[in-house]
Image 1: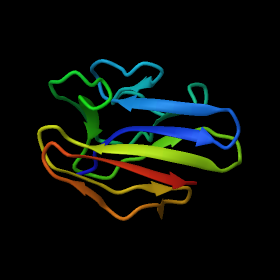
Image 2 (image 1 turned 90 degrees about the vertical axis):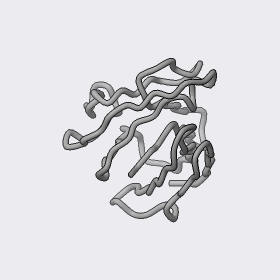
Image 3 (image 1 turned 60 degrees about the vertical axis):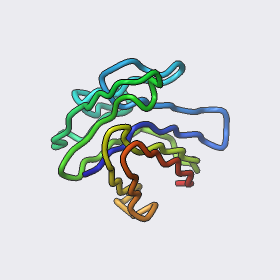
Image 4 (image 1 turned 90 degrees about the horizontal axis):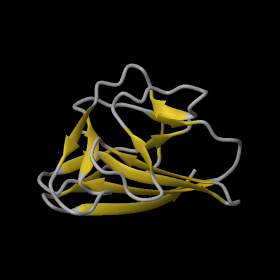
Length: 129
């Protein structure tokens, strides 16, 4: 099961993107990403069309951690970016269950080992693409 909750893309220059995945409240200064957000060049981000995903909502006061996108099968989220190096901050986990997340980037290259979190636990990962 893949459970990305939120992540940010920060280019070494001033441009940055912050995404909050799920269908409940959106964290301040983040862009909401819903299961229906299919990638388009015009929007510049979204899920690849074959994604079989759903939004999961949990109770709590933290807009960034209360909801997420999940699937029993791998799915891909793309962002249109100029060439460059990007620092990624990824938060995964589930307030009410366990999660396992695999991160692949570029040509589907593994960026991190599988991230497993226990019930009520979250993991913050930093890496560069």
